[in-house]
Amino acid sequence: MATKKELYAKLVDETNKLCDELQLKDKVRLGFLAILDEHVAPKAAGMPIDIDSVTLKDEAGKITHIKCQLSGAYLPATTDFFYEEKSGNGIEGLDGKKLRRLSKQAEKARKDFEKKVKATDKALKEDLFEGRITAAEYKEKFEMVTKAGADYSTVSAPVPTETTDAPAA
Image 1 (tube, rainbow, N blue to C red):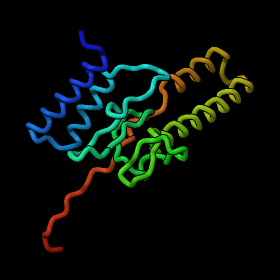
Image 2 (cartoon, rainbow, N blue to C red; image 1 turned 90 degrees about the vertical axis):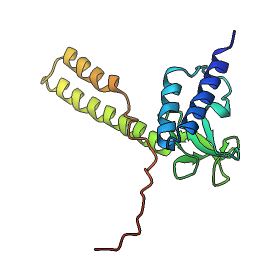
Image 3 (cartoon, rainbow, N blue to C red; image 1 turned 180 degrees about the vertical axis):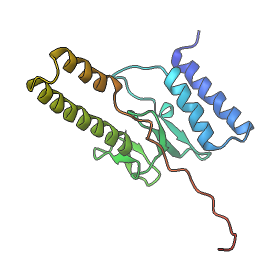
Image 4 (cartoon, one colour; image 1 turned 30 degrees about the vertical axis):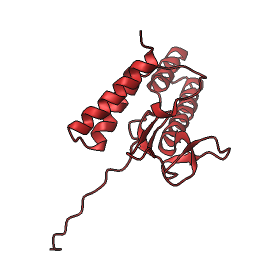
């Protein structure tokens, strides 16, 4: 019987083959792979990462995209999207630099969420101390904010725009 890792690798391989056969655009391929990652990818905390499971490569075998560890989105493997890994142990990007799997966009979303939680906590505590809300209301409102978590839906690569040779009007 195949392991989860082997089954997942086969699913990714078959998905890539199908996308090639149907000549689907990279954005569609990345969407399918993100769904597979979310629902099927084996998870093991503290285990070494299989580079092939968190990267996409071109025909020559060069890494073109890296999966962000926070958002799960595949982004171009450049320092425009990912932080550089100073220790040299990261994934080699398109620009030849070693990259961390933490995207700049996801880290910004996480920090923005932390700021929102702190501001909400401060405002709710003021309301609690002033007697405008009860302790139960404070707890309920604070849990609503923290339960939502950071919004990583904004993490994505810019969509390339097509230019036309039409004359300017």
